[in-house]
Image (cartoon, protein in one colour):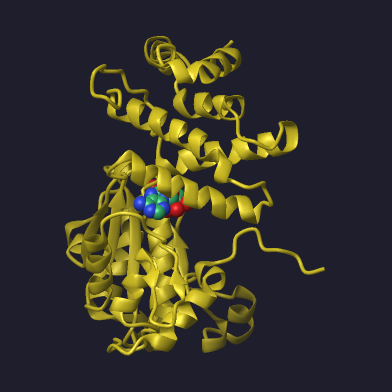
Length: 361
Ligand SMILES: Nc1ncnc2c1ncn2[C@@H]1O[C@H](COP(=O)(O)OP(=O)(O)OP(=O)(O)O)[C@@H](O)[C@H]1O
Ligand SMILES: [Mg+2]
């Protein structure tokens, strides 16, 4: 039996769509691009090709934003995706890299402990000691590999990296070279090389981008889903995807519960009920689309293993409570108020009200 991957990379998961696009794509491609900019946007936004192949939408939202992102990658400026948590920054970055160069794995994860080697290069110390500095002893970073082969490097959570490490990117982005003084050589970027970085709005001020680095990026801000319908469709699509991977039951009967989770999240996030009549306090938690997706996925697992296989209010209540209440004191007050003034008053929400009361005890 072959083991199933828990999470195949975008280029593996959507290999069929990518090759179908490649086959029918007659537009001009920038150097080393696997697809034309038009085909990359089609891959992201979805569509039907001339040969009938259906391309599933990956990003749900404003097409123009994706066009700007893709056009940026074809220039000498790098792309910075900014937004609140869970607005698909990492998701879009992975799919962009997969569609543009066929590889989404040249990845640097930014943390407070990210060292310069992650952006430049490091050494295999055994070899270094045995042979001295040599090509063979050099361990290239994902960025160096992307430069040499004309592919896309991804930098996740750019603003969490220490400023001096961020600044190592400046030479790379402006000079398009990475010097290796130990060997007296340099790696020059080949056409097709670019960088997609992501940064979280809430991290602003952690390690702010220097203005020198900021100027090397074109920034695209990814917004929260514009409408409840859009958010429901994002959650439903992703839950179906993940449910299939985790072998969870059919998700089509879960739509009603998904709508409810999204309604609760949006109302609390926006501080007003959907009909605009009652203003509410917002909790300190983020209540992102990504969290809505995991509340529903968890609920499906509960219903599959401990329920009757249909997603019920009692399967999502605990997950919602967990997502809303991040500060045990103030958020709990916000939640009880919402429960008593809004949830209780909705006639068709009686089951949900009861389930929430039960887990809240
Ligand atoms: N507009 C959207 N279109 C499609 N999927 C979306 C959208 N918004 C959120 N998602 C889904 O939300 C999930 C989380 O997205 P992702 O991890 O990319 O968020 P992020 O912006 O990188 O968050 P963080 O700042 O926490 O890193 C993904 O599964 C993604 O599919
Ligand atoms: Mg992310």
